[in-house]
Length: 288
Image 1 (tube, rainbow, N blue to C red):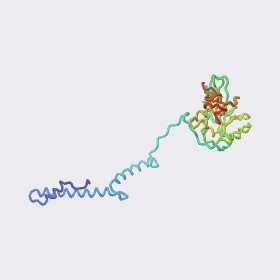
Image 2 (image 1 turned 30 degrees about the horizontal axis):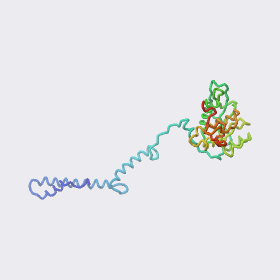
Image 3 (image 1 turned 180 degrees about the vertical axis):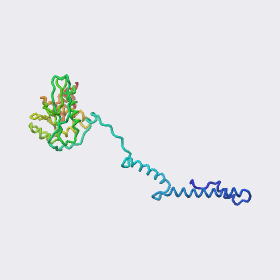
Image 4 (image 1 turned 120 degrees about the vertical axis):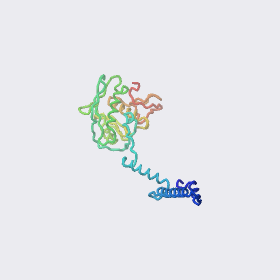
């Protein structure tokens, strides 16, 4: 150990019995040895003086404990604060699934998403719509409104070829209201038009009312036909399909094995008609 006397000090101790002029030098060597030994005892006592009585590496542990305690005072809980995460992009939010129960019930009351978004300027006809979201629904109404507007005014959607455009309003009289609602509330409003959406938790165009109903369960969770990896495309299909009904389009089947499914096919339920299985497709005009 670092406190043990070196061999030169031992030699000095042996020379202490010799007579002559070396005696003073020998006494000096003895004194140095004594000092070295005392220092070793003091150092050993300091090293062994931890709070729990353990020796050796506890000196380092004590220092680390003080450092951690110092960081804890800054962080509040003893942990290094995490870096703030950057806000997610629109595409990232649309690609996610969100938690929502298939039997969830809402308040049955709606609130309009505020704001105004114009449609394409060159549209031959402009349809005004409002976005309503059921109060208390644990989903992002702003994201829903953004998705509806982007989807409907896409050249692959019902705005294809400048035939029509879609303008979002939050006041006044719209042509129709696209409504995001819980499964139970969706069932209530679809039943007003003689439609049963309770069996498979689907959406509907409640044609006898002003409301195009988007089932929040499907919006949040998707469908097996698309899987969790195609949530963005599924949501686009959901919007296009139900608004397609409002525009007068009915259901169709798969036109041929391996072909893109028509957007008016009931893709939430299936992709196969007879012996033909189609590929998922979100758009009325997929080629733009």
